[in-house]
Image (cartoon, rainbow over all chains, first blue to last red; front, side, top):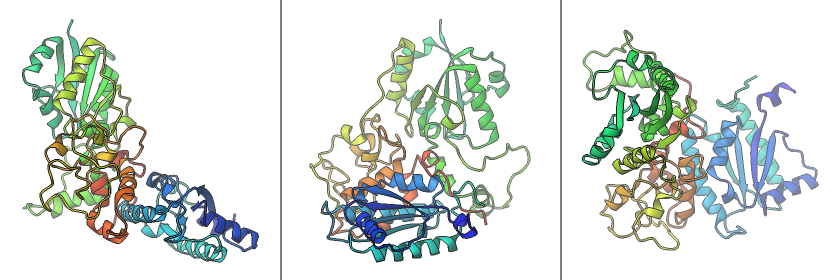
Amino acid sequence: MSASSAMLRRFVYTAQNWCSYAGADMAGTSRMQYPPNARFIRVMCSSRVDPQFVLKAFELGADGVLIAGCHHGDCHYVTGNYRAEERIRLLEKLIEQLGIEPERLRLEWISASEGNVLVEVMNDFVKKLKELGPSPLRKDKE
Amino acid sequence: MPVKVAMVSLASCWGCYQSLLDNHEALLDILPELDILFWHVVTDFKYKDLEGYKDGSIDVGIVEGVCRTEEDVHILKTLRKKCKTLISLGSCSTYGGIYGLLNLSTMDEALKRKFTEAESLEEPSIPDEDVPKMLDFLIPNRKIVNFEIFLPGCPVTSQNIKDALVGLLKGELPPPPNRTLCDECPREKSEVITIKQLKRDYEGIPDPKKCLLEQGYICMGPATREGCGALCTKAGMPCRGCYGPGPNVIDQGAKMISALGSIVDYEAISPEELVEKVGDVAGTFYNFFLPSGIVSKTVRKAK
């Protein structure tokens, strides 16, 4: 494992079924390169991401959590992504109070055709997380 | 033969024992059945009195408060060894309680604030003689020893304590509650609750009949288990969540964030406004629960 990938071992990418996961598929079938640090978790809607999941990911040592959903107005379930946004903004404030940098939690809107946006977001997120260093909750900090 | 009971207080306000005494006449039926071996809140027992009993020789132990010092941990472990049944009395003992908010600071920050920066101090100094060592962070009692019975609440209601004691004496405990506070709250609720405007507790006068959440007050009801009889909401005060999370919920605060996300009208209140209006997210949603939460303490480095 190279020094840079050891420093950032993993983050969690929670993609929602209808747009963002298809966006990731799009990036894959177009053979776009993106960083290997993500653990993908597919959920039916960005509002399916219970705040408990995010806290659990951090508690298990994830360096960052990226949640991707449909653009506003595109939700398969009408209002799911609005709900998700309200929750994630509250969560950002919460993790800040707990001493985790709020930049480690990110919410992005990625549609099924935006494989390139996904790659850009992932590259940018990995870059930012490397600047931040390992999560303070990581048990193995080598 | 009377049941042998030992009661200890760790870091706490002693309010839960006050709640026990608030049973008044009902105590007259219970007290003759009890043989109180240790209760240093009301009379002069020493810790060595408790240490002197044989292991497993006490029938029921009652713990109030959370472990703040190494002495507290020692007392808790000793009591566990001596008792057959251990009851966790109150939110402090069950979840960490209001003391748990100390986990938002490091120990150094907390000591500094209390003993050197507090406004009322004349001679600031951090005491270091004849005091037990402080723990770095609060951990809920259940992570230190096992309990048989949990009675959360801040304070736990007199009725709950009476039911538990009478149940123990009879050998049949009441079933644990299985719903959330909203289920036992008598306020009228619509089928779909939507919050169009958020209010702090001091803003306006709440309608005495309608659901407080619907009126825009942040009420922890949906994320809190029943058992208290909706004391606060009946009196017009939003629930602060002292009875802890509902059934099958791990993290009370996260669940309340989830609930709020579902019912806030996103057209009327933007995410930024929501965060601004809630303000202290950890303090509002984890008022009694922080040490038991998934991320249970600050990971900030001491400056």
